[in-house]
Image (tube, rainbow, N blue to C red; front, side, top):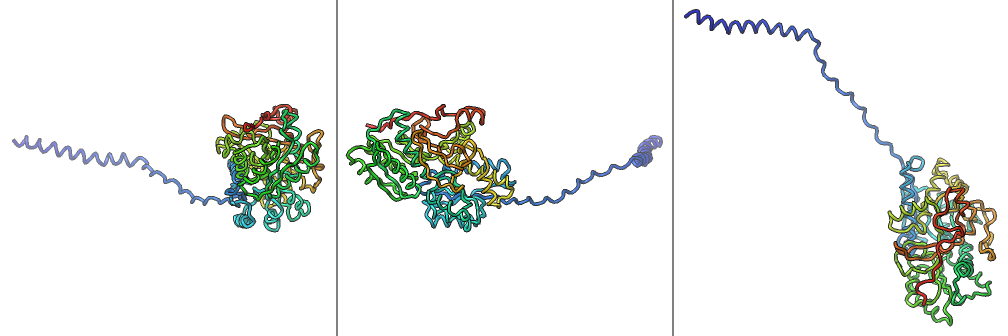
Length: 488
């Protein structure tokens, strides 16, 4: 009995002893190895520096968004918007982003123009795009003393403005315009209608008489005066009606009633105005009881809004305005991009103002200082920017920037006006005869060139661009002229 009890006690005592001996031995084994080092904490990152603030370069747009010219203003705005997007995608100008500041000047009232200038100066803009058909009083609001020389770029101008620049370069050197005055457009219209339409297309006028309806805007009067002077010198043609109306008028019932009451329907009606809304209103009121007359609208045909508002009613209406862009594949691509983005054709001022901004940016990059306004202007005058809407050798600055006030007279025998002597920008400058006609296409109404003289020739295109013109034939004539569908 005692033996059994001993065995019961022996087993647990033995296990305890073994465990007691083994524990220090095991501890000794672990103590011989190097203890594992705790993982190192990652080094503390230095505090992030605040992002560098890069001041944008701003361009100001003095546009009549809500006025009678609003359709063209929006077309120009779209072109500038695309240019700014492209510049910023390329890193901006001088490494700085470009922003747009807009000001609606409605119908170019002087108070609105002054407010636009003051607002844009407060925003510290470094370029202004002046979307107006300027006379001298408008331009003086943006002269050098008033703006500090900020470059002011524009498209159309008027003879008083041209004379002002020629007489006083110091006060107005910050203005650049990229089109000439009525001294070109009036004679061009005369040559196109009285010479080219009959000879190129065999059109016979019901009568060689012309009725003229003209706004009192200086630009319109320039064109009218010079057109009327050519008609007065032509023994085959006669002016049978003339009427002036205030700019921004949209009611032409009196003038049309008087034209319809003439002894003979005029072969040509010249509506000389820059208002998109006014041009569309005149056409609609004319078509209520049309005469067998070719109808010319001076600017509206170049505006996508004119075609949108009239639709098929625009068919057959002729006119002048900004020439189509150069016949290049690059412009074809731009036109498709413009159409896809804004659902309108890139007629009128869209591609033109795109070029103005891109050319200005190129000049600023060359000079290296956006505030060196005089140097930037000089660079723009002398540079050879090649865009969509200018001469094949670069953009066409108006000749008055070189104090050339030579009166332009068309060389009637050749149907091509003389070039201004001394002008070395754009070899075709001064002979850009142009005539468009509204046509209804599968994608709606749009302007179609029926004659443009001054496009790059096939030979020039082959050597300079490396391919033939897109959309014009060897005579540089666009599509065929069509008798308007409203003819009786």
